[in-house]
Amino acid sequence: MKFNDKTVWITGASSGIGEALAHAFSDEGADVVLSARSEKKLEEIRQLIEKKGRKAWVLPLDLADTESVKTAASRVETLVPAVDILVHCGGISQRSRVHETLLEVDRRIMEVNFFGTIALTKEVLPRMLARKKGHIVVISSVMGKIGFPVRSAYAASKHALHGFFETLWTEYHRDGIDVTMVCPGMVRTNISYHSLEGDGKEHGVMDPRQAGGISPEKCARKIIRAVKRKRHEVYIGKEQILIYLRRYIPCLFFAIVSKFKPT
Ligand SMILES: NC(=O)c1ccc[n+]([C@@H]2O[C@H](COP(=O)([O-])OP(=O)(O)OC[C@H]3O[C@@H](n4cnc5c(N)ncnc54)[C@H](OP(=O)(O)O)[C@@H]3O)[C@@H](O)[C@H]2O)c1
Image 1 (tube, protein in one colour):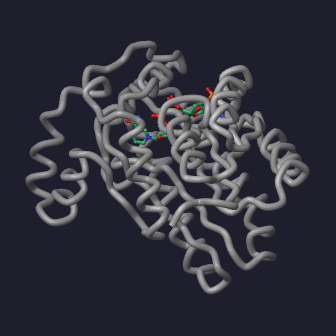
Image 2 (tube, protein in one colour):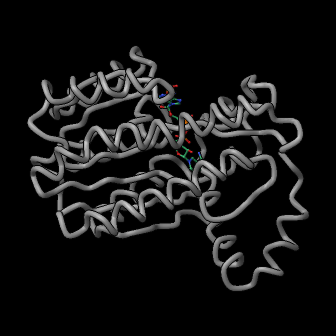
């Protein structure tokens, strides 16, 4: 299945996995709506996609600002006939231990990764229900399934997405709504640069483990395959082993993660 005649709205489209997804979906025939805060970067990506003969629109939004999410959701209706697939990829990570992290930083991470994501979902879902079809794709993380050093609020925000969207699926799958939860391990993107430290400052460095991750393009290809197959949940990258260890051999999981240096 290609995505001809489908419109895909992607948050986090200005960088990393979201940017790669914007290209991958449009290469498969989809029209794409590109959202994030950096309008200039989105515009450059839009132009690249249009050069390949596909349609793309720029729709800036800030996931930490509910009004901006609502405005974007009403503007999208004026741009495209319908959103067939909504990809929640916008997010920020963390590099700080629990006792070093200000509560306002925990809240900021939850605001962007969880509340921003569900705010946008609540805007788009009623229109998907009216059409009796729609696919919501959520870029969670391996850390949406396990705890990991210096990621307390990040892991919490991703775990929360699983609870929310699994419930959403139970409520609406009979109404034509599909949900795919995506749990990547390390992907070589700017995420560690923009991760928040305990006082809210950006981490500002590419962590060695991040640099050794898979490419965003490879990650995007695997996500596209999972979306085509309408998978409920997909794990990507070698770090998925941690999910299986946590589930089936928890003592080994705890022995391994206890030795991780908190970087
Ligand atoms: N890289 C990994 O190893 C990895 C692993 C597992 C899961 N993930 C998840 O994958 C997703 C994408 O991350 P990435 O690795 O591609 O990192 P990235 O290159 O830093 O991209 C993050 C994206 O989120 C957007 N964003 C951040 N804050 C935002 C806000 N307040 N409002 C709207 N958009 C915002 C950024 O755009 P602007 O700055 O322009 O707003 C950017 O487009 C995230 O949800 C992340 O948790 C990443």
